[in-house]
Amino acid sequence: MASALIYDTGYPDHANMLAIRPADKNRLAPCLAKLVPILQQAQVDFLTEPGPAIELIAELAEAFDVNYSRANAEYGTRTLVEQGLAGNGSDRTLGNFDPARLQRLIDIVTPILKTQGKQPRSGLRPADIATDKFIDPAIGMPAAQR
Image 1 (tube, one colour):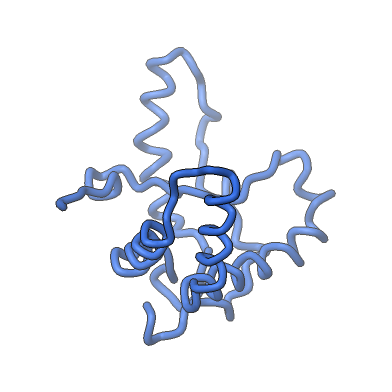
Image 2 (image 1 turned 180 degrees about the vertical axis):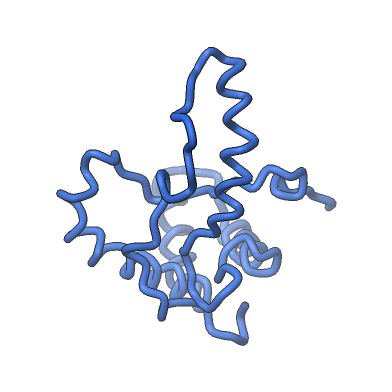
């Protein structure tokens, strides 16, 4: 079955990011400093050894009568890694941001929002909407699985 990625159309989306309200950043910083590396490691653990999580997902899907099979979960996980949809960025770290990619996204979305009568903040930059402050640069996928 053929497929296409939205990214390949030139839209460099950053999906499934952890987001907070900017006003809450200082209050949540101690929590984020602990939570973000845990989430990074959980992603690495899942991608390198998905079996236990897939088993639980399949059991829960059956218990809640959700049409999601173990085979679907295995295919999805394998596809995430094979197509580079989950994994390290251009370095050894999982979960950090690429400022150039975010700037491209801002450049695409800003004129669209303006045509909808919305006014994004003037001079919006990647650093205004994303941070690697809480990312542990030592956490990433092993070299053999990148």
